[in-house]
Image 1 (cartoon, rainbow, N blue to C red):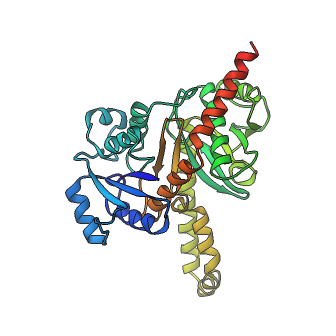
Image 2: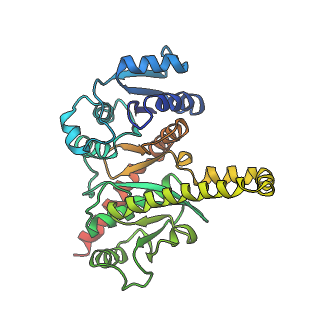
Image 3: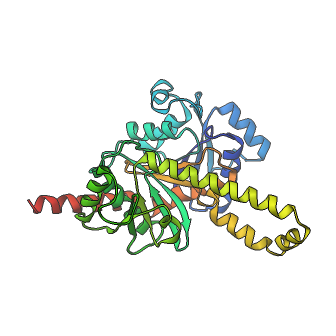
Length: 342
């Protein structure tokens, strides 16, 4: 499998991207070739600095003279900077030269480029970002986490189908449980938008819809996919990340203030490390953009080398498990059933 990495994307690019590339080449033998897309002179310098051998047949640089900054308006800049690392890497997926695209860069730019160049799958109007969140039962995906802030009920129905296909294919969940984010578990709770979405989901075959869920259910309830529009999803995700960081900081402050607590923390060091690994976005790497005609993985803007490495892993897994063909089959079956029922 071949991956096109936006080597200029992210808050700490290109250093973390090259570091992640080195690890991915070391740990993932199924990675047949990794394309480092970006300014050639800059990337060659960073590769030399970190010891990445460019004579290795599994890695090469693809020159892209422009970069879309993290604070630039994504959709507008994608059209303006046609030779940006995001556009050049996405073109490689479009042309079949790469099997997956990975970027920790401008999310809006990546979503816009994927939508314009790859187009959406049949039966999908809007793509959605599926972001992993650990809970008591494993991993729950928030869908959408920011690609489509003004979603319609039918968009969330498609997300339910796509999230189910992803959970089955990549995570191996036999019957993924799908919940709809609302302000109460009762069927009648929610806005006009969530009520209409609820009604459609109840009528959709092929998904295990468990009804409305609340914020606490993200961590306490056995769920595999939680549906919401991109506006709500992005706010939820950033709030959760900020809360986790704040709690970690508060805990460190309380521990350091007492010698006995310091000693106890040393004894519990293994538990703290395990908790950090489970709750860190670095472990999960990147979020698939489901619904486009190609594999697109969007990583956190502040990704470390470990996060970039794991984002590449998610890309490989998504290609290997044929998530997109699974999504197309599921949507086609629903469309066929709708036609037959008329």
